[in-house]
Each structure stands twice: as structure tokens, then as C-alpha cells.
Length: 365
Image (tube, rainbow, N blue to C red; front, top):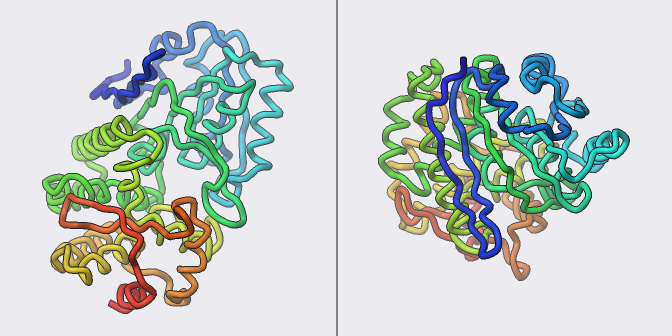
């Protein structure tokens, strides 16, 4: 039997239709056939996973799906480097070959890469099909599975091709974290600590106090960390679905992080690792601006070190390297790079006024 611990709601109403959807957090959800039958309701299913997650969990989920009217399984090569047009075509080709209809349901079983590509494929398929996010990594559970950002990478930048396409459900089975490699787990903690930095000072301090329990993957500690992260993400998305305002704050550390990923070669650094270094850079610049106490940066660096995350960009990258890479980021507006800095612990803001000298200072701090 499954154990549902928390159910949150992402509120996205429109005048003509309510697009709100639940985030379900629990244990043994993948193996609960009754739960899945209630979600599928006789629809055809395109199950998308990768060659690392699939061998661990796909058979369990397929058994839970039972006698679904039509099941197509797509197994992609794992890794950020495969988040590309070729993989997108693989998903769409399989769905079209098996003659799925618009009423079929895409199911993304995997980390953020699988979730992003599956959601984008669903948005394109017959001009829009439903999909369910089943994130199996900590990073995907607290970040990419919630909010409807879908897409693929391009040689000129990360996530430059995509669409806003909200899932109909997010199903978080905490049991999948047991098989997550240490490096992947740490990468997820980068997104968790981000929420405290930009939105909830108390949560930030709680995370610092729980470092030991988090790294030991204590069940109750992780359940709360994921719940609170999803609550914050859901509230931001409900307020600003398409990043016209406050949702941009969720990109704290990402402008620098995406540049690091691109310059290192996608997959060399994990997304969460690059964001971790990016948050330190952005925090150092916030200190330089006089809006953040230096002690917060020291606490962030200590947290990163304790959980196994980078505390600085690769030494081979210069300020000019980062600026050039960031100039093609999707967050550029009217030709200007938009940076997310901290106005204090738990308070983020957008600025375009970051200089090369600022970045040099942060890289050398």
C-alpha cells in the first residue's frame, strides 16, 4: 500500500478553464496500481524514461498501469547532453508510430531532463496532450517537475527551445531517492537551499541545522524539505506562471550556472552543481552591493561544502568567458542580461546592472 504524506495544489486558474493540479508526495506510489488506474482512466500512455532510471522503476510502473488500452515505452539515453532535438524526435516518432491520439497521456519517469523533454513533446503532440511528471531525482522533485517549463537545449544555450506546458499531476515517490547517487542527491540540495535564500529565511536556517539529517537522507527530514520547496515553488508559479515578474527570482544562481554548464560542456557539471556555484557568485555580488550580510555567504559556502557542492566556478573560466556565455541566455531582455541578486536573506530582486568588475570580484572572493 502506498502512503500519501502531503498533497499540495498548484493554482493556475483561467477564466475559461481551471488548470490547477496536485503535487502528491508519498511513498510506494509507483507500485500502487489502484492509484495509477485512477489517474489513467483508460487512456493510452506514452511512458518516457531513460536508460538509468528505466531499469530501476519502469517495470514497477508498467505493472501498476495494468491493462492500459495502449502503452508505448520510450527509453532515452541519460544525461544533459541528450536533452536535444534528436531525443525530442524520438519521443514524438514513437507516439506517432503507435497512432496515439490527443487524448493519450505522456508520463515522464525520470529526472529533470526526461521531465523537460517529455513535457515539451506533449505540448507539441497533436498541438497539445496531457502529461504527468514522475520525478525520480531530488532536483526534479523540488524544481523542474513543478511549474510547466519544458524544453530542450541548443548549442547556443540551455533551454532555448521550449514551451510553458503544465502537467496534470506531479507524483513524487520518495522511495526513488534511495537509489540516487550521492552527486545527484547533492545537486538537488542546491535547489532546496535556493528556496530559503530567495523566499524563506526560516527555511534557510532550518536547512543549515539539518545538514546531517539531509545528507543521511532521513525520511522525515527529506519529506519536509521537499514539501516546503514545492510549496514555495507552487506559490511563485501561481503568482507568475510565465516569468513576467516574481518567477524570475527562481533563477537565482541560474544565470551564472547555465553559463558554467555551457562552457564546461553539458553534462560535465550537473545542473545543481552549476547552480550552487552560481548562487555563491550572485551572493558575493549582493554583498558587494551592500544588500546582503557577508555571514550569509559564509553559511551558504559551509552548507555547499558539507553536502558536497561546489563553492566557486571552475578556475579555468574568466569573467569575460561567463559574460559571453550569459549574453545568449534566455533571460536576456532588450539585449541586457538580467541577474537575480539578494536584497537580504529570503528576499530576491532582478537587476541588469552587474559589471565585469562585479563578476571579477565575485570570482576572486
